[in-house]
Length: 275
Image (cartoon, rainbow, N blue to C red; front, side):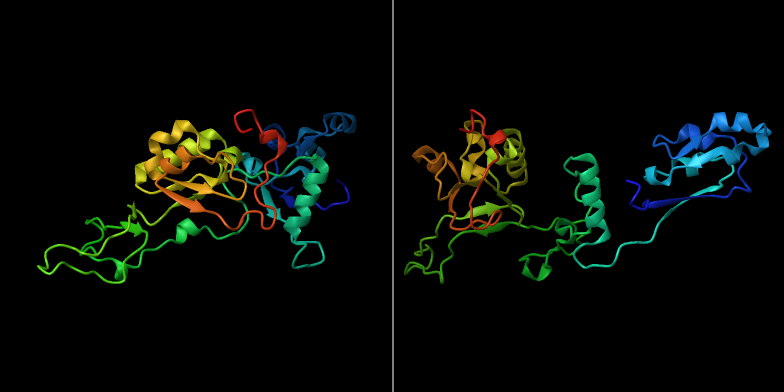
């Protein structure tokens, strides 16, 4: 759109430019366009050809291809400073996204994760060694046990009069080889293949995944020792075998993803196996 300033500025040192047209051949976005007809009509020599290259800065995506292929290094790409009135909510990025959506009519997608400057919690997970029963003397070479048990714990331990047998009954606990679990996501929401991948990963790492409120596909019953089944208000796919198959049962009394409305699937996801 002509009413929006370009995001990047294409700066060319015209004194160093030799007019080799390398940039016009390498740019896949139509930033450097050579006006061949205008050059012929001018009757000027080849050394003046550089003055007939038009720079369409609005097309630049800062791929840097022209910068690295220029034989005389006369091209530089710079980010233009924000030109909008500063606003804590309507930032330049938000306005740029609105512009892109209006131009393309498509959903904005970013490859390789999230392009927003949000915290990556997996990069900030640390283990507090003071809670480890037997910490490693040399943590670089010795493994550290991260095993965790989830379940009811007795307030105290009581023994038989001979002191050899435990009198207190220990409730069944879930044994996790790592203190990380996979949260509940229904297979209708993320697909059966995704559920299979999560279940296989949980089994391999010795932890647990949650089924979400959509039930458990029979293809995953053989991994049920590492799966926590969920019972929600809708009771989707909840039956006796389902409850007995899982390693544990979670009763959901709140909704975190969509507060107040419960789980909703788009119509296109309600396939025959789901329904």
